[in-house]
Length: 417
Ligand code: ASP
Ligand code: MG
Image 1 (cartoon, rainbow, N blue to C red):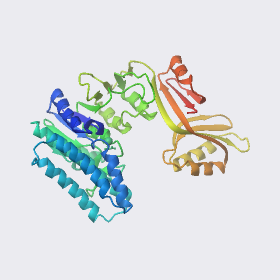
Image 2 (cartoon, rainbow, N blue to C red):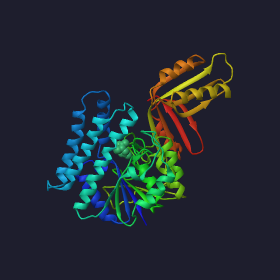
Image 3 (tube, helix red, strand yellow):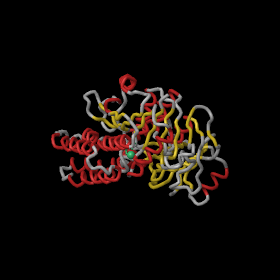
């Protein structure tokens, strides 16, 4: 039965990373697989700069050259024989990109973005596929734009599941080794679309769903899903087993290991997800599947920095009731403020929000017309799932807590910094 693998940008950021993909495939068996690969390293960011320069009608020659040089370096390291057909293939891909830049008339950012940025994945998969071939690992390169059909919401395309499933089931030979791109698809007019930043996990889940795969493995530069983000916490532990629900909860509160959209298609068909280290191949990592809630059963810590705490009360001391609250939520929606936490009493209403789209000023202006408003920017929101007293104490000991909320499984704290 087919297994789906996904390698992210960090796993193919240099020649050594590409060689490691070969090693992983040799260790785990090289047939009955479909391998989804992202753009190499930070290529997507670099291509975003090309988009910016191009649309600003500035010269994009430099920003594009950076992308070319980066891949050339990797190619030179992987292929000693300079006549190897991969060089021509990559040259042609960049030529195709330049042709688009030359002939395109659209000034629509989202559309132009997808047509340009998608080359990161096309180039990376071509290099990996050719390298594997060169090392005698026969494989089929598949164009994900032919496999994943979407609507035309560029940069956040929605999958047409029926079409996608039909195509994938006829096009993919599941007994072979297949290589394809994450992140990209195409719309009804065959223009390239993308599924949103970090969308390769989601691509892998879509394909796993359509092929009723045995499992999906996401290979990462960490051991698996940890109980805390090592950037903010000194002590972290590996979660060996979590349920789909637990993974969705962790992602909801801001844990960044698994792209949240990835879980739903997997859960629908109960396809297990493994998150494993591409370095320590003998370690099992984390299994996400049905059943068993969480092993080991330890507190999980999630932090979101740079949040805003807003306190509202009525000007005339009247109660904060449904009418006011629904009005407030309409404004949050209008200004794209993601609400992390809500606490209300008779005359006040407090929320912690994520000012991701920088609309705070406008929102506050609007709110001030109706309510007494207090706010504090730069606060942190800590969430502990499966908390115990010790976990809360540990977190509270060196912080000023502005708001605290407990439910059965989860405690949330808004702190000053
Ligand atoms: N290359 C894309 C990005 O960096 C997709 C992905 O890596 O998942 O957002
Ligand atoms: Mg990436």
